[in-house]
Each structure stands twice: as structure tokens, then as C-alpha cells.
Image (cartoon, rainbow, N blue to C red; front, side, top):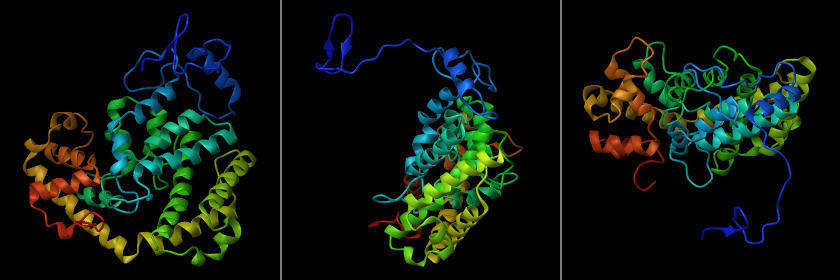
Length: 362
């Protein structure tokens, strides 16, 4: 079907009624509208953006809209659909890294709109913040750390390696690099928003996944969490997002009210005690580490088996052996399924040692 021809154009529907009257807003006009509408301290889009490799400005899109679009269409972002959030090889409605990134973006943009920050920059940082994660969740950081000087951290790796070919704006890369609370503070308000949104999102949705999996019961949530934030994810998000908006406007910096921040901390500790550090989760992490290191060691010995070796070698940004760097970069970019398939095919890896959820019959 080729659509429906009218006098000068084609419509998708023969009975289309929707219409508008206006004028096209070019990038410069939209930048002016943005500058007039955002709060003092928000990051403004200007021209082509502050990029490592200069570019010509886009005719229609702001620099941060280009960043968001590049991230969404990147292989690194698509691969998040096959990477662990908490449960290796999730089934049914359990979160993946991709759904986590989408939920972080929802929380972050809600906050950004509420305080007058740059929504598009916030969304770009949120969508890209976990693109440096390897297969198997946070255990991949422990797996790769011995090979990389200073250790493997998914935020810096995402900004400086996985997404580097996209030539993103420095503000976007800074927010991705420094979204973890253990990193230096982001340079922008929007980066700070994503730091909070990440923690809010995973504390709420990891608890929900664990509840549906029968790992925890909401009846044993800490009383302080229930009293201040309720039991359900929707309640948690409403309270945490609302507190950041209200407190940030009052204090002039991205922050949360003390008692609500304590409830978030209590919820996070509950998740660590009952979800992340439970024996089955620790065993899953140990299995991931063992398998990923075996893969890296294999590719270090046989670098000719890395199909994109030259591309990965061009991304080296530390003093490290080239073959080791490329082996880590290649394995880090794998989805869970591909990593485990490669281990079985190349190493004759015993599938009984696969993390639970990947083995045969899972």
C-alpha cells in the first residue's frame, strides 16, 4: 500500500482529519525558545555542540537531540536489550539493561521538566548511561578490572570507549561518565539529575522484579520506607521524584529532602541484603566472572578471532597491551547470550557452570 494521494502530497489514511497551521521552527529558533524557557543553570543547546571532532550544526535538531538520536540508533544501546540488569537472561517481564535505561530516562525527564532543566540533554545522558556495561551485570566490572589499569568502570567505559565513535557532545559524555555516585560530580545539572534518577529507578524496579520472582515479600520492607514512600513502585517513584523537584527548587541544587533520601537509602540497603547479596545472586556473579575472564584470556591468546580488532584498537585510551584491550572491549560489547554461546563454542565451556538462567533447560 502506497498511501493516499491528494493534490500535492500523500497521506497515510484516506480519511485523515488531523492538521495544523504553523511555521517550521529551525534549530536556531528552537534554541531561542529553549533559552527563554529554561531555568537559570540549565544547560543550553548551542550550534553543533561542544564535540571532540567539530561538526556543522544540524538544520532542524539541537545538538543534544542529535546526541539522543545517535545513542538510540547505536549498536551499544541496542545490545542493552540482551544484557543483565539483575537476573541473567531475564524471562517474562524482568528488566534488562535496556528497560532499565528507559525507566531511568522517564524518571530523569520528569525531574528535568519539573525544575526547568534541559530535558533533551537529560534524556540523552539517561539513555546512554549504561552503554559501558558488559554482559552479566555489575559482575562484568569485577571480571574485567584486572585487565584494565585503574579498573573497569562502566560509566567511563561507556563514555570513553563504547560511545566514543558517536562523537557526542562533551556535556552528554560527562553525564554518562560520572553518573555513578562513586565518580566525580557531573558538570551539569542534567548529569546530576541522571545520577539520582538511576538510583531511584533501579531501587524501585529491582524490588518489583524480585517480588514477582518470589525472592522477597513487600511485607518485610523497612517500616521507614513504607511510612514515607509506600510499598509499590508507583508510590516510590512519585515520592522520590516529587521530593527532588521540590527540594531542588528550594535549595538551588539537585537534591532530595533528608528524610526521603534516608528512605531511598534504606530501600537500597534492603535490596542489597535481600536481592543483590543473596547466595544465589553471589553464585550468579561468580559464574559470570569466571566465564568472562575465560573468554578474555582466550581472545588475548587468539586476537585474530576478534572480527573488529582494528576498530577496537583505535579506541585505546590507556597504557595497556593492545591485544588485552581489544579482548576486553570485544567481550564487554557482547550480550549475555552471545558471550555464553562463544564460551561454549570456543572453549568447550561446561554449560553446567553457566550462571543460573542460561544453562540448558533454563
